[in-house]
Image (tube, helix red, strand yellow):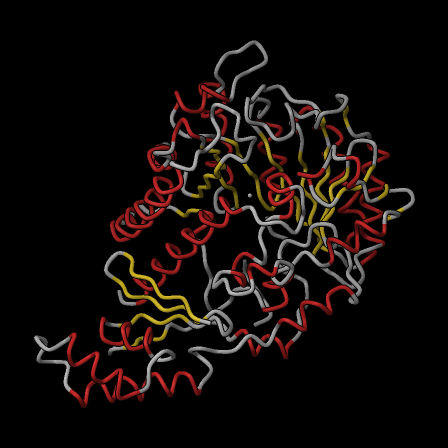
Length: 457
Length: 34
């Protein structure tokens, strides 16, 4: 299966199953398109007619190009066949170990963001803070169920995790005390709205957190419109100086600024550029996922605008990289030579199998976006996974779970997409959130175009 | 050249290698075992 597209002056061909990527000229682009539909004589005839005014396109050139394409096919770099489907269905039989937990350290928040999927941090339930005892049990559960995995990940999530910062610190200390004993390496992440950042938080985070996710929606008026404090005031002026200080002191350690864009700012590239102007270089901007009845929900008409924005962003980033004032955009960061193996590409995020969310009460859910949906409760940190039926369903959430995706060129990039988005859009974890698909495919096209552009520098 | 092929990880080769699972979980990637 191949995918061909033109973007920013490049003709790009992706071979889905081998992972190969080709940058081709117009003649090769046309022949690759016809190669499986016409015989060689027909291709020759069509090309000679189409390029009759181009003296560089001779009969010999066309023949040579066909020969090159045939050789790439022989090398399994074009039109490679899908040999992975049977492996995907073996996934149900395989033994999976848990390697990551999302600790809902606080089901409460000091902001009142209108679009929050966690309903102001409460996940449609009671306000609560995770106790040290529950957190400790969660870490023990992770170690016990991680098999031979060396790297274990723990996200401190909420709500606002800094509202329970003392417990965060104690849990990190406890995890570190277990590392040598069990031959494990904990990688911690903190996701925060920034209001409670102080010198203590900065020093601790920069010492212990592998990554820090800082929530900022971009321009002040955009951010303050939906990210308000409990008394209804904007939070931009409070958090930006704190984020700047944290990032400056963090030096080369990972962080990123994570924004959400809505129908109110479909020109979100301006928000990303604003983040860059503030001096931040690791950036992310996500489309809001919410009920279509919300006034800020992205509309059908927004899709094409958003796709144009992604293309605009990719071009700006190439230009800025050239000028030495570049930044990274989360969804454009592809590593073509050291990217994930086919197993990872089939399995996707591992929600419900390798990755679980833990509520303040110790209940286990497939991921943070299912917390509060009672029927998805998998068990708890005392008894482990007891709802085997749901666990089995998540084992089959992979790139081959949806028949409709069978012929999609992007399936080994998206791994079947986000189960939570699918569930909230269609009522089925193996449904298809088509809006998200459209945007995802455009982002991958842009990311690959950037790689092509960089390869010919 | 009419066709320029970028250097990419061969996915079919990674099938034989098996997945080690040490990469980060993912979500709304760098493999150290290529």
